[in-house]
Image (cartoon, rainbow, N blue to C red; front, side, top):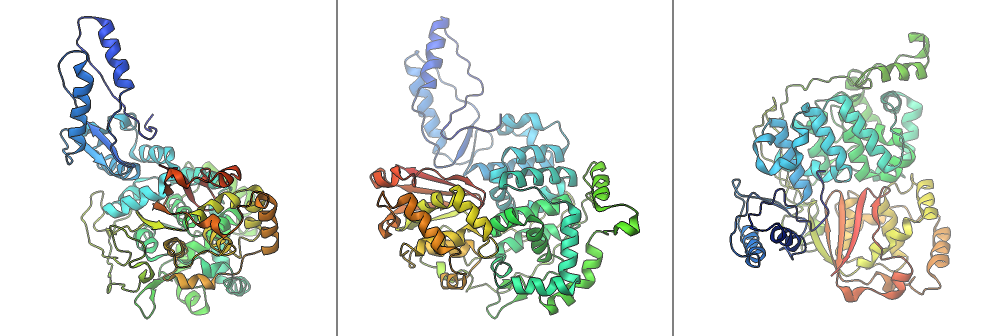
Length: 539
């Protein structure tokens, strides 16, 4: 196993030289129950060797003291290696694996069973074990400047299998390459589909704005791949999981086709507003006229049944005969990046200044070029404000995630996914029913998740769908407990977040019995319709 539970101390090999076997057994039992020092929140620390001598009573204390000393020192590749999170650890492991260096580093011993496999199989296997963490791992790889190298190190077939697994985790069947390609072609080439898309843009497409960081993270990767490649579709799934998970569950082919249209070269997103901010353009007539010539070369050829002498179902079965599931363009292309970072986007996330404290500014979008191996010449290294935290006084808003996760509410959200394609929009509108304090940092955070520059833009969201039905459900479920009132949202808490996880930390005395009895403060866990794992911690 390459995974460990939180707060676990794993000893790879313990050698005890003692005169009696009973003494050695007692020492092992003592070490198993010892109060080992904490490495820190989410941290992973590898210590190569501890060596102590003394009486049986002295040894446990000496080992604990020596461990504390190592935890208080900086990284020393010969003796101590630490990683701030599992995502950071996995990003470093994948980078070393791609370069063929993993077997030379003692701290990767737990993952040694992957080292004899082909690189693509090993990378896919490790990612498959950590599907929920995949967005954070990709963000960390992008921070290191190695996302493209790792992504292109995957074969199309292995990436397609990961996409199938991820789609199952989110809760839908992954559409075939042909389904997405045909829909993408029809959305751009067909006048009827084009005007239908423009009309729908007032509901869901307009809300699917890709944040500049997502564009910068994935564009250098996707520009090297065919839209039919499994690696392309896996990336689109990760983008969709963050941008519009509800629509992805309800209409996966349509959502993936729309996202693909944002990256077709020349990219529609390469437009800037008056503030110099990159924005993904809607598929208006001008955009389609610019995209259509390159699209005919980018899309896979999809013959009609009359042309090919077979049905679409037969074509799909033939594609499955290919070991890479019909994925084309398996060989990584020579990679070059000419990216103009442009002026500092001082207005990007201006609403977060002095509102969400973090180690890094949301306005910092600096890129720098880094030389890489594996034939890649340049890739942007992106500062990642996704890994940060803030204080909120409206932490109880996250309690409503448990309401939204009830089966009847999930059904309603899917039914109205075209109106509000993101679970964050549902949470915000539902919170307003309980007089959510709009000045709280949690509102800013929700705006960030929805791709808005300013929390005032949340007013553009459509109103809460099926409002009367939703409020009737709230009254039925929580009316008798008396919790369905504005004070439910009042909870002072610290929130830590990443592209894959949301963690709320509150004091133990913040636990309220009526809220507990209503089942609102239990751990939501993995929420496919939100695209995150949400956990509540009371200390």
